Image 1: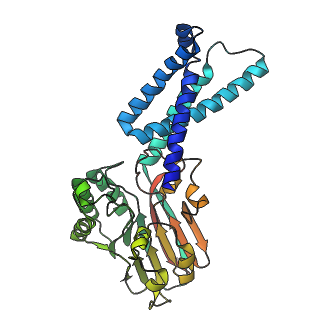
Image 2: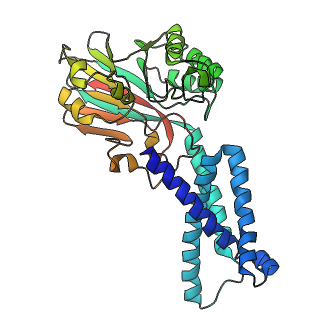
Image 3: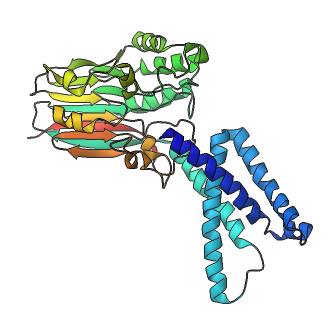
Length: 370
């Protein structure tokens, strides 16, 4: 899927560069300088395109520069289309190239909103009812912090304080807590912040696909085991295909990430629930939302996931579902007696905009029916 996504981004970027150069060439100042020389006009139109790529690339990285160019192309196409319809209706052309001006303005506003959606963290609440004897339980879930992208390890402390203000009984981390580029200093600071949480049952963590690092411990200066040690030092319980009992009525199962399946290091859902009391409420932490059928068959009550970033960008939010890579992209869904929640994540990864969702942590209130 990632090959498809990045291939599409590269192709779209090349297309947008060619198209936008031809559009900038329509501005009067460039037409005046180039006169009737179409090749010169195109090259002059290419100059502002390259400048935009360089400025955004230096500020936010290459992938965000490419995303910016594709958005500008799409909005320019739409503005050109509207402009032609209006000109056709009024039977005369505009004296200035208003479509281009509008396209640039709309793109800036749209991506600015996307920046806010990615960097501000909302609190999303769900209330679930059950016949099982749980009384009431308030759980906070967050995933995909990718510490060091939208906030540093120290900056993460402010989000921890916001979680604490919701008075959770338990806090769970469903993977991609750190990234391949997360520094050791940021990792330690973030773990220290988690250690300040005060809850009834503690803080629990399950691995995501990025947490152990794709490029070895030398690349970022620490290993998956070092991360575990730092989490445990700060009273966070790491669950790797393991189960704990919260109080007397709630099981919490933390799964190894799906990426471990290739090495045969991940237990099946059937194995994980074997021997558990079916009268107790069962919560599963599973970073990637990709095992819904087996989880429903296993009879668990709630599955919490992340990984998808809520689809990140409109209108390609649901590519993961269309390709079968994910069972769900975002939100709450019930299948049989099992509730599934996928969070859009508390931060970002490579792309610094969210236009199809917003950053969040999730508050789940589980209540026993009267």
